[in-house]
Amino acid sequence: MNRLDHGALEKKIGYTYKDPKLLRQALTHTSYANELKINKLGSYERIEFLGDAVLEMVSSDYFYHAFPDQPEGALTKRRASAVCEQALAITAADLGLREFVLLGKGEENTGGRDRESILSDVVEAIIGSIYLDGGLDEAAKFIHRFVLNDLEKKQLFYDAKSVLQEKVAKKGKGEPCYELVSESGPEHKKEFFVRVRLGDTVIGSGKGHSKKLAQQQAAYEALTKMEEWEI
Image (tube, rainbow, N blue to C red; front, side, top):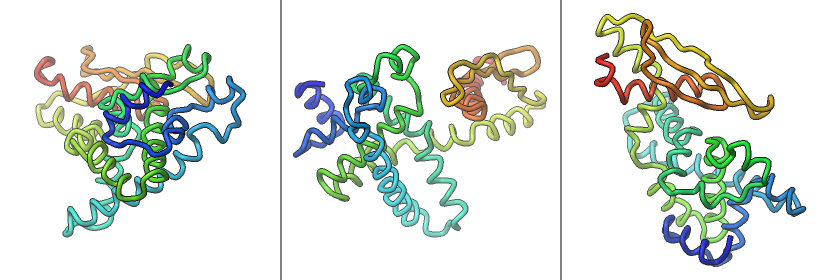
């Protein structure tokens, strides 16, 4: 990634790095580091570890103060919906991060650029890199602007299966049925493709690195198409 690319991404995220090497590291997948024989410490893994902790602290503080009358369990659920893998992948999509991630050829050829697990890791790594470069306040600004936004949509995604079941039950349409269509990839990087049906009608589909996540995606798609399917 050249300096021009750095500038384009810095503009997207609203932060200019004093040390641009931190941004490059935040975008470097282990496969790319291995391919170029860079020390593994040059990938985003360590920075992601730090970013995950910063994200948990900032988001916990946000929900604690935003919902002063809610108990710990409700706050935990709200936080989970905002910082889960799919929510962070939404953040990555909004920022167009897929085009900036540095992947090895093997990971590239197996669809890594669109893998939610990688994209969510990169968001956490960027948070960690901003924290290292500019401190907690700058990292918090990024989190509030790009992660703790559009929370209703992220909450709906997180609760998609239960919300779909409730809506279908209210209309007397029976039970949604989730069907595993296919699975691919090695054991440690499985990707599952799932469809959700009402009777004989497919009302949604989704994919994810676990059956649960694929089902959640399928349910969310079904919810967004309820009028189309006359649910």
